[in-house]
Image 1: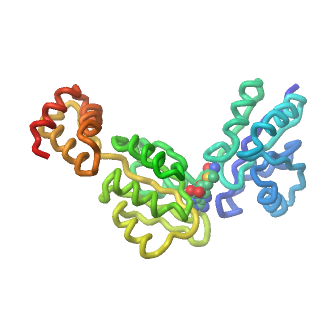
Image 2 (image 1 turned 30 degrees about the vertical axis):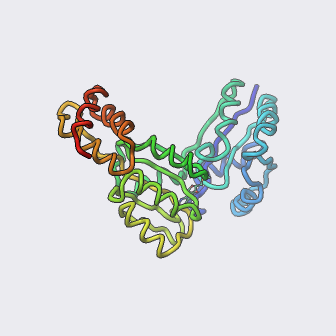
Length: 278
Ligand code: SAM
């Protein structure tokens, strides 16, 4: 009989957030695969659990994944943990889950702390429809491409970001989405200095230019305003093209995006845009 893979979420700050089920799973697993064994050892010491640990992280996952799968197929049960939060969400684990699924191994995800969902819940932004965008690239060009692709996104957007990149990310977001777009910056969640700053992208750039950001952040950015397709008029199309062009989008891209958003044919929007002196 093959064993199983358990995805065990761990606290994102407050050790009290480890659940009874997570404790029991860590205790009963044959071994624990950890992103950083030193970080996990601290948690296990806190919980009074002694268990065999193997490392599984971004740069050894190709090699280690096979070994973990072999052990599970041989009947062992593995608990996967990352440094904090839910494994496989912007954390190692995604590939191991795929490998296990392909090998016919049962995977069980235990619900628990996740920075993205904790932040979304307290953001004060719309939570009905949202998309998780994870980390933006560190390379300026691909970061901009990622954001450009989200210009027309109407769902609330969730981003992870490191403090040293926060300011440049906010500046890029303000350029692409506009300085008046609402954002909630959720910092140090579940920790002593937990803080939620509900503001606009423009104001956030000003604030963090003055006071450099510290700690861990999740950014919850409001989606673009919905434009009702059935009531879209020539005026709506002209206004949206002009708005996008004022944000630095080329006429061609502004026409393409407006046509998609308003459900109008591209050539119709193009004719409207040409009439517009902007
Ligand atoms: N898998 C984890 C989860 O689901 O929560 C996320 C891991 S990802 C490598 C780390 C990022 O999560 C950080 O850069 C930050 O954006 C966010 N994060 C983690 N803990 C946080 C906290 N306590 N407060 C705010 N953001 C946090």
